[in-house]
Image (tube, rainbow, N blue to C red; front, top):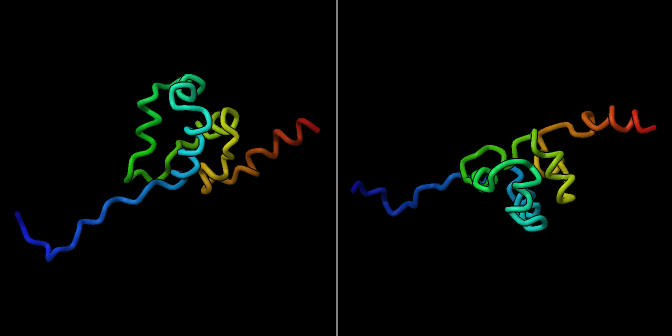
Length: 93
């Protein structure tokens, strides 16, 4: 086994939105959330993995928000949700 000078290997960072995803899971429970999203609970567990860039895939964020109240903006801060919501707001007016 090679000696690395006592330096621990760096573990991959948590994905962006990980804390928000954990809150969503805690609020709705994993099995119930998976059923509401139409996926297996194992898929949601994979979203928690270190090394992913983002925790939740963007296409699931609106459903996650609807089911748990955790805003899309916290799950995926890289997406301009206000722009995507604008047509919905205009239709409602």
